[in-house]
Image (cartoon, rainbow, N blue to C red; front, side):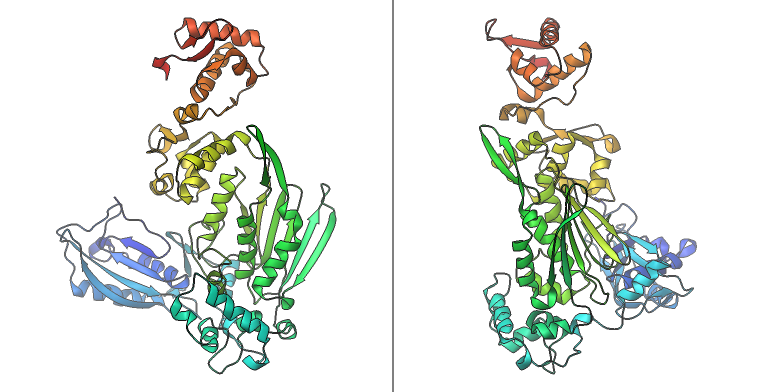
Length: 551
């Protein structure tokens, strides 16, 4: 099995640094890309699509040192550390070294080119993207700056007590942290600096309303509801200086009643309420808007609710290296200390897993996946309430009751249930996977448990629900075709029986209502004559099922 490259590791052949095939310029571009993102590791001596070096390959210290020295000459503001020769268990050798991320400068090649690492590619940047990179590499970290010279004694004592108690009660915080003094806990979370003054982050959590209001760009959250004509029918504002982040979130969830609306759907003999927007999705999107806001830009967070969708937007583009097409897998921090407090208080998923949760919850309720748009000034996420596919929802409910699946498996199953069948290339695209080889970790045990089946090979592989499983479940899965000729109707009847098992003529017609019952009967007689169907029961109670050879 080949090794996988990602945003923080790259594998190169030894030919890249030796002999006539050496290409130090492209290696320098990779190093610059790592430095401008989150840093990374370059492994040299493993061929493309291989998992190990050649068993006879040996690396000399001279080759490693000359490689690092040459790359230093070809780059500017790139830090190379920990060069090391590694012996693989097969006896072959390779070498590797790490590249530090730059914090205050932009790394470049010696000829002035700028690259950034996005997934497993080194992408050249210029223009607005270069401006974005410069903004990300600003000379200070907004969270840690202490502007107002506010001492802990001047902060809101109730907020201090509240924060410390919440940390001490959190199941996500180690006992080592919980046992610290109040000042030590606040220092650990960067809420106060070594001089005892509140940082900007500390002012957000611990400050009085008047102190928060003096921050350069305090947050205002605007909540706007529209009718079918997209006319404003309700508006509510929350000024961040009146609340700490947790209380702000709880206040929004309490007041934004339109986000709690639900739709009633039938489920067998019962009816169930299905929320227009899953609770976990709303919270994750709200807290992400607060956590990843660019606090050095002026601008409000907007929550816009339409009859069929919700749109959340906040100032600033996505963090460097994150795009709408890789957000499910990439990990990047804009406000790392704010994110740590939110995670330890249990308000948001672990970094990088938030969108996993969003995808799973939307897929499990057969809702469209989020639509993400981002530019330098604004990031917008749209999710749709949608009219759910009732049958697909019943399938997910049935599987959840009878099988234990992972988050990834439920996400895949939800997508396939809504699509009926899907090519592996299309599924990879929906899951933002750049190679189909990685799809297996998402498919997981769905094939082994016979929940899904596949047909075709390589890029022609299709995934679909396993008919045998759902015939046992007695779920009434309606055929998708409506107006058809006799031959198509025969195929449709067989497809219906394949999924639903033994059924009567009336039950079949009930699910093909656009077709005359006489036409259904003629097709049933023909299929029995062709030995594609068999029957059970007398004339009035006759039922049809697939012949064994057709199952």
